[in-house]
Image (tube, rainbow, N blue to C red; front, side, top):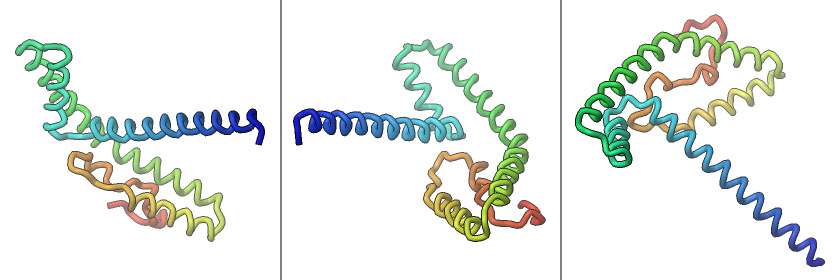
Length: 148
């Protein structure tokens, strides 16, 4: 191999590693940010408040106000999730049905298996939002089946 080809492979490998690392970091952050945002855990909010206090040196009055804001926002988000959850489930179920209409019977069976595998690899952790227990696109019911 000539030197130019070796350097090209080296640079290509380096760039691929950087891209893979960036993609991995993005996925990691997305999961942890989502878990934090959907968490109703007081512990998560305490950690956030502690971090704010460390970095911003909040006064006692500011800490109390931030806690009240976070509590109020959490309550609003819970109510919003409860109101929108049926629409989200319906939309995702329709999405699955539209995709399945495009597939052959064999592809439909493999698609459902794929969704089952994906669903089984998701772990439930303390603090996860229970309203995200089962994604409607992973349900294998006929369209005439009533949702629970």
